[in-house]
Structure formats: structure tokens, C-alpha cells
Length: 197
Image (cartoon, rainbow, N blue to C red):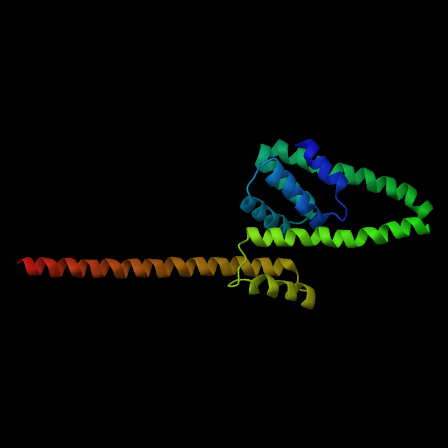
């Protein structure tokens, strides 16, 4: 597990959302430690928790695989490589800050990072069962965050409240339907009993 998360931490450029497809490939596709829907739930939970998204996901996945020790191992393994790399960059980048080759290298990396961030959107949409009926939810969410600079926290809280309301409404209507069905059955039984008499 340490090597898997160390590989993720070492080879992910862009951090955060860019790590999601790599973590998913390692823990869901390659090793099959967790299922697709579990991973999606962990991404949502990691997004709502304070701290670095990729680190939060690593901790949740590590905890799911091997408990508290797994969480510690996953956190260290995913964070240590980037810490060492950024430390080396900080030590040597000041010397090459105005170097044209270094600047061109970073210019070439940026579009690739955009693609790395875009990939998990489609896999998460598939896992979240986004369809033509509910596609308006992610579209509206994107507009609120990007267009109106609304914090994702408020959207997540609103989604939780809406989910509870829908579940409560479903339970109430289900109970009402069951009660109505019972009453109809009792009425039918009474009618049958009267006919027999």
C-alpha cells in the first residue's frame, strides 16, 4: 500500500483533483481494494473536510483498507514524495527562475494538468449515475461555483439538506401509500366476510 500511494504522490502533477484519477486507478481498478461507489463517497467526504483534498482521500482510502495504520501509511506515502520534491524545487528553483527552458517546461505541463483534472469528472459522473434527469444538478453546481464564486461547502450543505428532505418525503409518502393499501385490504376482507355471511 505504501508503494502504491508513494507512486501516486511522486508522479501526480497538479495535486488535488489531478490525483483523483491516479488514486482511483490504483485502489479501484488495479488492486480492487474498494468499489467505485465507495471511492465516489470518499471523494465527496474528502471535499467537505478541511485540508488538502488528495491527502484527505488518501487517509480515507487507507483507513478503509487497513484501519488507522492504513490511514497513516497512505498519508505519509502520498505526502512525502511531494514534500521532498517541493523542497528540492524551493532550494534550486530560485537559480533557474528566469531560465527560458524551465519556463517552457512549466508552460507545457499546465495543459496536461487541466486534462488530468478533467478525467475524474467523467469517471465520477459515471459513478454518481448522472443521467439526463439529474444532469442539471452538476451543471447548476458548476455555474454557482465558477460563475458566482459560491463556496462548495454551501452547495454540499444544501445537497445534504435536499437529500434528507427527499428521503423524508419518500418515507412519508411510502408510509401513506402502505397505510392506504392496508385500509383497502381491510375493507376488501370485510366485504368478503360480509358476503360469506
